[in-house]
Image 1 (tube, rainbow, N blue to C red):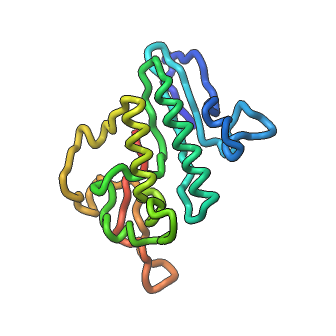
Image 2 (image 1 turned 60 degrees about the horizontal axis):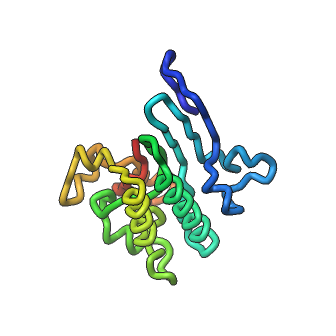
Length: 188
């Protein structure tokens, strides 16, 4: 769902990007004008383009890693070919840097710990995802506007407004592994 202010005209709205159609996991065989999981909204306005995405989670197995790698490659290709100003927003499912998670060392020890080494850790905070995300930003000459406006050198307080995903307290169990932990994986 995208809400656009009345009177603000757009010239085009799409629900996938050509770069994503190159990977079978991101192509809807029934309708190639849409991403099969509704992960993309692209809108062209008079002076800029807006790309809103819900990036796939990196997961914990080879198939998921490949799907996310293909997504990142498509996004890199997409932003590299832009000639108009672009605003990219959404749940990008990656914490760009160590200061974007509450407990960096802890997150690196979670979940997958096998090979390849750059996929070890919590999905959204693996080295591979962070490297690819920086490559996308660099290739597209994009700036993380929140981090630009709120630079930090150390991890901010866990209870502050710095994280967009937080672990919940225990509900039906004695301990909740992610309670008190957070990640900044959504960008606007």
